[in-house]
Length: 156
Image (cartoon, rainbow, N blue to C red; front, side):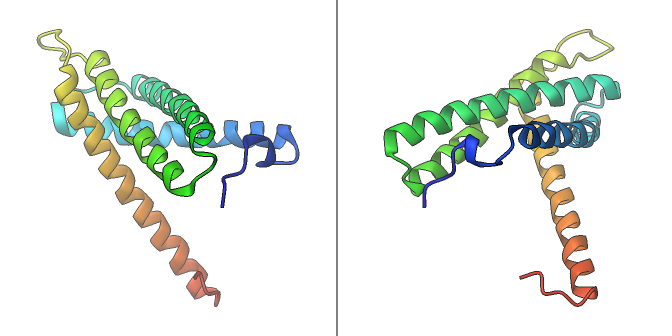
């Protein structure tokens, strides 16, 4: 089954744009907090919440555009083959992970030495933030499934 083009995701483009902006407004502070924790645990460096949100915004935008470009190229080359599109999605996620690690490594400075933490520690920060995000997703999914079950609905 081929994926829907962006124009078919919503009948009204305004709904698509508002939904995307609302998703960013919710996800950037949440990921900023996760990034704040990851930086503190990995590097023992304190960064501001605003800086963490800025790094989150940069990595989300780069990941989104890289994913869209990769999806468009892959869709054209494979004529919508679902297996190849899944592989392209995985490649996009890995590319975003590595790019975010490099971004973190080049934006976070140790306040004692005034040196950047570097891409290796940046990748470790990205990995810890990713794992924290997975944990948060699992907890949220468990709460939603629990609430639906308590309400008498079958979530699956």
